[in-house]
Length: 324
Ligand code: ACO
Image (tube, rainbow, N blue to C red; front, side, top):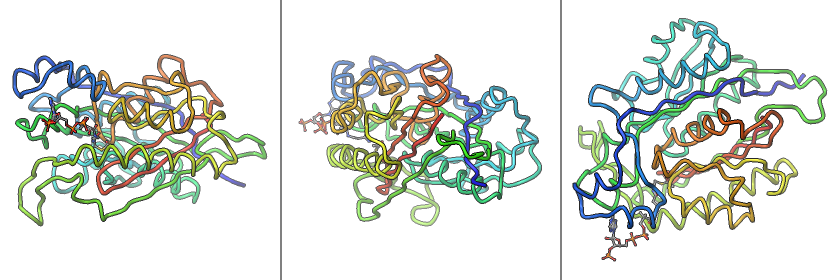
């Protein structure tokens, strides 16, 4: 009998500190008008000095477990997507595992930058379908504020910190014509584009953490093309068309990227879940943060077709389709 990975709970966490565009304009040569016009971002959250990625992840995971009525000790697997781990090793996921008092199973990190959540979801889905795990926490958590060059106005205005999590559980299809759960995942990468978006540090190159570097317009161009094409690929794999999507929950990089992708697919703006205005780009956390909001406020309902897509450094890109 076929197993499906069904989302049974969502949760998110944002640090308390709100940094507005006006505040950034006091640090670098920028303006609220420029940032809003080019990106749609109004403000972002920044982690407190003593808050690590794992602290944000633990809070999001606890809320997701509570909403799913699942205890930490009943989780079989944690897959945590991050490009800003607490330490070079061990995996940030193991910190979350300890905090949730989960002593069984396994916990590990996945690194695909802004596409991290889609990669983590795909890994978790495969574990469930193969019967290797039944209750899985998938987390996206980031503290990008720690890898930004706060003197570079072309990048520091774009990102924020946060975390989101979902709980997946395996359920038998039971012969249903329209089974709930993850329908398919589609992953891509193309390492030739390294220089367009990377961090200029790391344990085996500079022995420093480094700062984010980006060719903004080049990333923009690829983002729109790749996100639209991978979403088409996901729809085709499920014999669906854009009109079948109830909610598109895209990676929240830039409102102009969201609008252009939706336009390419002829998707009405009302079907796109947007949080970039308040969260900025939180990399791997952006999709589960937006997802949690749309579930909490009742937009996403059971049996809705939810499409997610992302693109990030590598380049990496991917999409997932879920019957909620
Ligand atoms: N404030 C004021 N002016 C600025 C700022 C700023 N914060 N940043 C750049 N400028 C200036 C530039 O210096 C340039 O000035 P010049 O014409 O005198 O040289 C001018 O604004 C235009 O710069 P562009 O880079 O051409 O501006 P563009 O319209 O392309 O917008 C942006 C830049 C917002 C970065 C856009 O390219 C973008 O969103 N790219 C995608 C990047 C992204 O989202 N990356 C996230 C990671 S990947 C992902 O998540 C998909």
